[in-house]
Image (cartoon, rainbow, N blue to C red; front, side, top):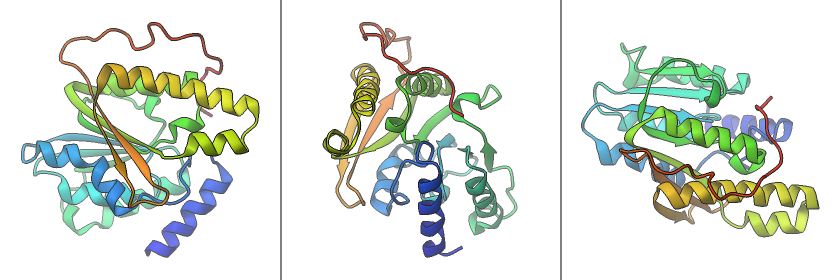
Length: 234
């Protein structure tokens, strides 16, 4: 499948379901490189890596060549139209020839991912600001559970979304977005180890890097005011 077909598929799904496909286009090369930086930093030792919200596989394509020998990549995507394409990518990628178990694609929400696997690196492509505060809290808590102590999570948010939402959203949507930002800010205060702006992306994005501590940190929800909107994604 060429890039034009993938872009069209992505745009179609974004229009169909903006809550699970929150980007306006697949991640560009600069953004994919920033999101996958922890994999390069930890090489060459074998790694367990999770990609959540893989979409049409723009970041997956960046991850596969960076996987050190003996590593495993789990790709989680809830959209069935995307998971089919991701499985074909895993089945046909030349670097995975003869290693069918090295990359596994799961049609699932990350908070419902079965098993006891823990990861050195998690790369998130989920549109967290599209969810309710309760859903965002559930996802972030699950990410920390899935990481090994000392493991790293990277995720991104588009720059300028606060201003755009203030102009274009209803008051209820603006309140929901602000509440989600409070949830994310609590995690950033507790666990962030870095953030970077990626201007060479459409639209420009900010990448955050969080690390699970080797010892339990205080609950990031402590001190947060009550926020509305809970429940699992459907």
